[in-house]
Figure 1 (spheres, chains in turn green, red):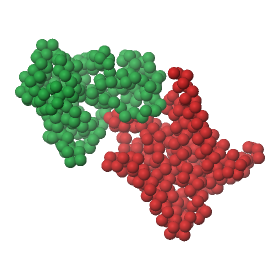
Figure 2: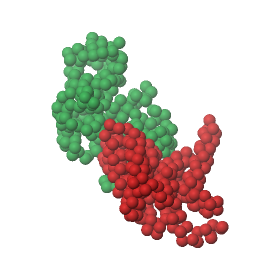
Figure 3: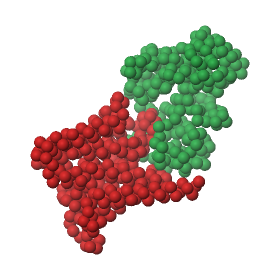
Figure 4: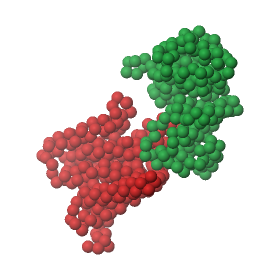
Length: 267
Length: 273
């Protein structure tokens, strides 16, 4: 089953090309790392495929349904790098997590007792129950991200879209975060599209790479990524370290993507 | 004059019924508008109401009924302008606000200048609320409460995080349109109570006071309503005692409540530190 199919997608903003002729397909169970330097169009691509930006050129299908007619939003879980939540929003962590159930609600979207129980159960599982009655705005960055992850996962979505989700987390929380996500991919075949700068962190989990810099530089399996001339040409010779490590340990010591100074070299 | 004697007058009863209903709906809507950083929408729409009222006075039609469609259309204009992202939301509010005042002034000049009726709408006079206007307040109150009840979670999601709300299947455009249209209706209704110049205060101050001390969304709504109603009853009563304009006293009482809430928050923060 195709989870996502993008055909001939282009996007311009104020006359500048942000994405050019993007074509790719994601199938059930894929765990894809979306890589690319700042300004490469990663977040724009995510926003387009979620309908948060108007798609004027090209075709986007979600779960074999054209985006404009797609309604099964309970199958999608989206976690942003940071939310645009009002600073003084008077909402508890519990209320924030429960909001994730909105997509399962028809009509007036009113919550019931069962929803409350489901929320509590998930918060316990994700170890954010202890601060369920605290105001979301008063939580630390890591706690907020854990609450937002719970909100994203509460529907058990079939397709998870994560846009640099681990930025606010410390290293141990980050490891735990990726373990949770990977378990979902392995045990429930949840399809994951993960925007990241941190190849070293996710290299051992993902099975595909998508490298984007306004256009697709590479899209394919981890094995092909390691043998790809396009990847080596794009990232430069230092990539060999990454590739070697992916081959041997499933991880790599590569500097973060934002540290590379131009197309080709890392500093 | 005792309070019992004060509320025995028919016009006072009408004023209190209308005033309390307006206080409740401005406070409830205000919570969403303040959190969405759209609180100045009240200011802009009330300035547009000036044009509508002036047209009504020229045509000899009940001004509120004339202002209502004009303000509603303008509220959709604000939504459209800010949605296009070509203009920031606060700039869109400023543009609509200036257009409202300019048009209102021109229409008033064409009608031979400001007369006492127009001045009444500028600064409000809750004590002259007619039975028809009281009835309109009751109808609008129930419409607003019904909308907020049925769309409560969708509204909260949209205010909390619009991107998330969209991906949760909430039609955020419809919710935003509902919010601006309700604001338009409420602003026109409130013009009679506190006047064009002070409408936005009713939308902004009670929710801001409530946000200082409340910990949950529902508590914010309850506190904002309670503060707003208290200030309205108090303002009307004090206006009788001291022969001062009720609209100004309503706002002053709201400001006093805001100051008290601010002090409570300050004291709590100091205690915690």
